[in-house]
Image 1 (spheres, rainbow, N blue to C red):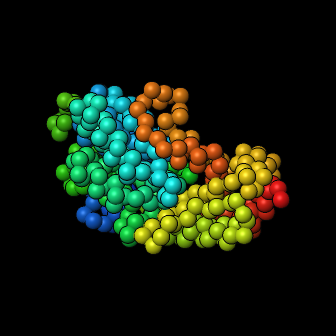
Image 2: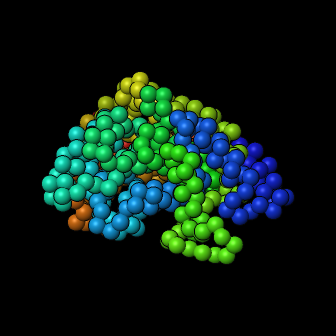
Image 3: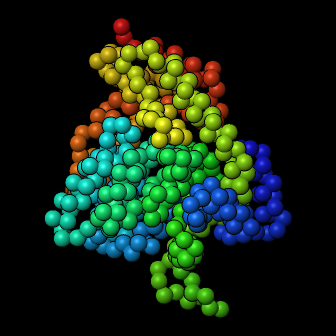
Length: 368
């Protein structure tokens, strides 16, 4: 917390604006729009998952539609596809950014058209652990086939590609302010929209699709997805330390890089080149079992015994039981990453001494 959050929360209580609208919500959306630039409009919502779902609603997704989704991700990227009665079609990663492979994406589109006679309804690339994707290439494929893109930038708040904020390239972008994200509203998210008219349409659906008449009239199914004025107040306070949080996560990435530089078999996931500017929401490493004589699960258990929390990378969606039978276009990259990857402590309160303790504990697991 920045210390500024209570000021906005107190204002909400003093003005009696505690419901899912109010001055904090409006001001928080303005802050987010300023961050996005590119004439984008933002709707503050109850969760990042709600934002993904609303994007699909606005795109008119219906039962029987197919949606291409990155396989290497958290399930919230794919679940809203099923909410709409549509079918996820999973596409594997490329090994540089760990995000959606543009070449495999095109293969999947061609194959789905050949098999179903229809184009996928949308494409959902994800910025895994805050690392920008090969978004130029993904957008080029999407434009060629005229398929909307919904960028899941839930983990990439503040990340940029070619100095442009992740989440502002596609038709819609997704933000998350869950308790473990770069900034938090305790729980919440936002939908990045292309224009004011789309923003108003999103707000309509997010407030139960109530028609503008004196009584409660509903012609379309709506949702209770708006952010509360109190949560938005937390978000306004958090925005004042966004740059500080980004700098710290990037500092930790540099720390881990230098600490493991001479350790054969441990690779820190870093920006591939100057086009990429990741927020390093979670710093991640790959552990080569042949070179290190150990594996990620042994390391994870050892860290846990030392009171150090870590976790494996996301288990690919095409391997999840809940999505068994969903079409998948795979190249082995995500499964290989899952088999040897580990997320390290990366939050704002992780000090250099903490990070050194993490490194020393990992090195203690290695076998000569």
